[in-house]
Image (tube, rainbow, N blue to C red):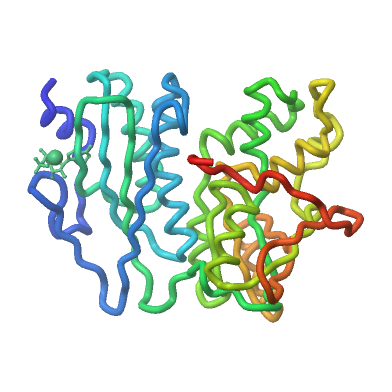
Amino acid sequence: MSEFDLIQRYFTRATPSAVLGVGDDAALLQVGEGMQLAVSTDMLVSGTHFFADADPFLLGHKALAVNLSDLAAMGATPRWATLALSLPEVNELWLEKFSRGFFSLADRYGVELVGGDTTRGALNLSITIMGEVPSGSALRRDGAQVGDDIWVSGAPGEAAMALAHLQGRIVLPEAVLNDCLTHLHQPQPRVELGLALRGIAHSAIDVSDGLLADLGHILGCSRVGAEVFVGRVLTRQVVHENVGLKPDLHWEDVRQQCILAGGDDYELCFTAPVAQRASIEKIAAELNLPLTRVGQILAGSGCVVKDAAGKVMNIKEQGYDHFA
Ligand code: ADP
Ligand code: MG
């Protein structure tokens, strides 16, 4: 199968909302009047972000999901994507599953694949996503204000718990294992939440590297500090009670590390004025997605983390850094 047959068979679909899609030297796109284009790229590298034998359907989903998550964190409506693929060989079964995983999520959000690049090499997936946001209303990292509540969606830490389980560091109970694994392999980008938060949140970020690390970006960009109460972050009761551990580990340490520094959940962390609490609780109910207030923006810099007793914790790991 030639490169062009491959693109034609697996990655060429109708793109009615693009002026020009796959097949020319460049795609042509038109944003709506009064809208800004939000653009973001995320790369998934075999051996770093996933195992080489990962299920291709889930990989297609996840590659797009992590990109959609960035648009969600900006409050942008996803519109178009490009896909740069490096493949060690042409494996039609792999390509068929990968493209199905990709397009099933793309279809859910009306994202059109308008171009890309395909080469031979180590397995590597790079997606650029484009979305629209009314001029001036994107949710940025630099908008947090002193006195804002800090909110987190979902139950961050569950993807990291699944990874710890796969690595044999903990044994998760049956009742939550599948949910945690789904968070790891098939994260759901919080696109609807990002859109609902326009005009309500002062700042937002998606949690890809760990809650403290990513909140730290909001704090740095906004030139503010924060306090976070680890006991307030949602975890399911069954995880508290039934987890099995290697003898030298303390469950509370692992739990806190997963919550505070575990990446891969793709939940949103955002800040909003106290006056918006009721609107945010309404959004949580409408989206059927838990939104939890975990702390407060303070003057100064850095983040103080307090345990359930209100005692300041000494945090070693804040999140994942590829070059640390
Ligand atoms: P060029 O040589 O100009 O870079 P290519 O031969 O790489 O063009 O690509 C031909 C067309 O197919 C272009 O429109 C490109 O955007 C598209 N394309 C290439 N790879 C992919 C892919 N993996 N997914 C979607 N479109 C692709
Ligand atoms: Mg090319």
